[in-house]
Amino acid sequence: MKKIIALIILFIIYAVIVNTCPAVTQWDRSVITAVQDMLKDLPVAIPDSAGGWLYKCGIYIPLIAGIVYFFRRYLLIDIVLFSSAPAVGYILNKFIIKNIIARPRPPFDMQLIAHKTSFSFTSNHTVVTSVLWGLVIYYLIKYCKNKILKICGITFSGFWIIFEGFSRVWLGVHNPTDVIGGYLLAIILLLVYIKLIRLIGGKC
Image 1 (tube, one colour):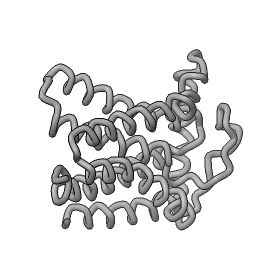
Image 2 (image 1 turned 90 degrees about the vertical axis):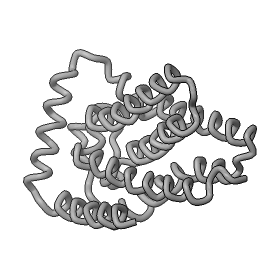
Image 3 (image 1 turned 180 degrees about the horizontal axis):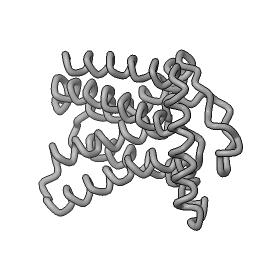
């Protein structure tokens, strides 16, 4: 519990610094520009799909697979915890944190495709993906007995978490610090959910 409280305090301090320090915004812009210049020869469809159909597949497929797995083993509490985690992350970030921080998006001329006008801090795609696939990693470690499947699953999950956040910066729809904040918020939520899973999960 102390670790969770410490991370919440760290997140609040980080959010204040990100939203009030002009040097942070300047750094964000320089990173976005550098990433886009470095990857300018690659099709924009790559990062765009990570926020579109690939993003949806990356949510629905593990959710359905997880629900089926837990249902077959009568782990009903785990179904609730696993399926509610990304929804809680989405609601908490989109309707509370974004509106409290109210940080503007990068300017339109930096956004390669989608011209987003909603608030920027933190990245919803990063939060939801990290919470969901973070729990996939946790359950793979807990239940998967096949070492090859476990290693492949954990490796893919880690890659997808990183790429989803990176794609937001690549497209210019989020600042790098928005993505970092999303990872930090996701870690807090993961620790809370893992604590709940250990307390009441796997029992019915």
